[in-house]
Image 1 (cartoon, rainbow, N blue to C red):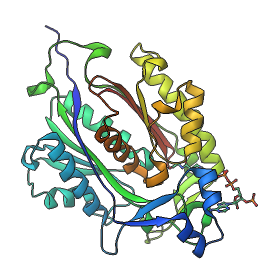
Image 2 (image 1 turned 30 degrees about the vertical axis):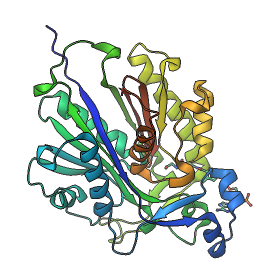
Image 3 (image 1 turned 60 degrees about the vertical axis):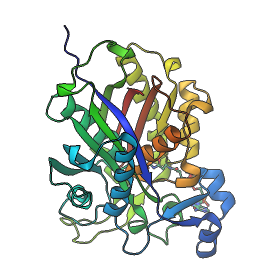
Image 4 (image 1 turned 180 degrees about the vertical axis):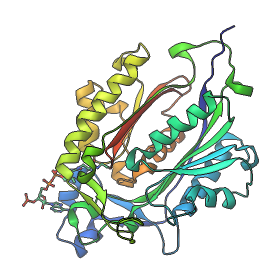
Length: 333
Ligand code: UT7
């Protein structure tokens, strides 16, 4: 019998801070307007973490909900990966704080840094750990507090971002070692393939102007929006094509795309280039804004809770972020 190692998302959860910041409120502090923000980005509001509320708090709440949704206890988790570029502290990893807050002392926990692509990179990493037979159950979390690193005087960036967290529980399919019976190939439920890319030459179009080694300060987010926009459309289109082709599938086989939520114009543009109807593109950017590594698991939780994502659906998750980094995960839900 062929040994087929695979991993499957068995639960999702998310958490958004209580405080909602509307475009109208921003327009009172900055030279901007609800009309401009809506027309250029599709964002109408964002959530902002309360004073003292940390990335690890958001991550823990999302993780607790994902565990409940999956019917798994914290004691069963072998590995916790937190994708974040806004960690609580320089070290230790936010993931180890989440582990402690969940009351677990088992297994390992670490952070992964790929900015807005962080969740896709973390999911790919977790999938590889499972496929290697090293772990059974992984909490994959995207959690961010970008409100702490945006420059609130820069209207070109601060209106775009929000805080939040999303989590999934990834488990080896059919127990020990992930050995599973048929169906296999592109009909099997679970993660079918992962596709990761980076190109550090584009560092300067999206970065934070601070850090422990460079400036010994936290710094602020800086972005050349137009440049990033151009890369986003091209790279997200290419990596979607790469993912379906790798599985002998066609773009028309996709039931859903769950892209990183940066700008509705990017979501629409990629959907159009791929020839997919807008109904197949899960969009939450209007209410969450850009939550970086948290945006995909937040969107997954919305689409799974409202019944859009159904068992057996073909789902493409894809993202691009600072680095540049970009990638995709193709899964059968
Ligand atoms: O998550 C990582 C990935 N990040 C992204 O994917 C972001 C990608 N980029 C974008 O989403 C878009 O480029 C933005 C939303 C950031 C900007 O949209 P744009 O259509 O590229 O506008 P722009 O930067 O060319 O700005 C157009 C005008 C400028 O004025 P002038 O120079 O034409 O007079 C800006 O100064 O809009 C002005 N502007 C604003 N006006 C009102 C910039 N920000 C604002 C604002 N309110 N908040």
